Image 1 (cartoon, one colour):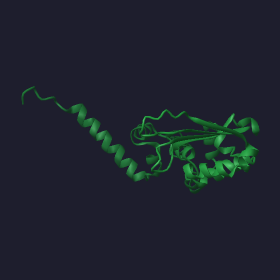
Image 2: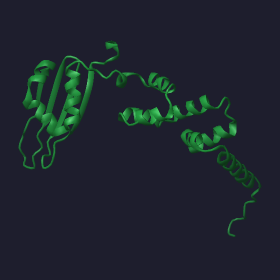
Image 3: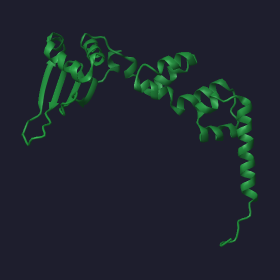
Length: 191
């Protein structure tokens, strides 16, 4: 499982809390923690960026650096990176999208709703057209061409959650609209 992890386990950047304009970057690698900062001052002071690189063990003992991380990025981020430094890796976040999508096909919709709330990446995958297209195709043995056309226009998720009668109404409206377009006679210019 460790080979699933890249060299960088986590990274985050952001501005310090108000009134500070300073910018910070935190990077957790397999072997160390890097904390960088850039002092932003309204005066023309020539401040150089700073950097601290510590091993995981040293970071776990460095309360001052942990307090800075908590102040800038919050308690949840500090707790997460502390767990990373202790060897508690989140393998799910490091799986490629195609594997996550394959795993998600075995979940119930209620579980998808819960999974969607766990991280930004999983939310994007749960909302993706690729996931919902697969779900529709898995639920329906065959997907008629007119339903596919509607799904490309409205989205696969919309098609999945729309009942059959409403889908048939939308398809017939679109067909009538296309028929009307074919028989429209263009008006001469100027009228």
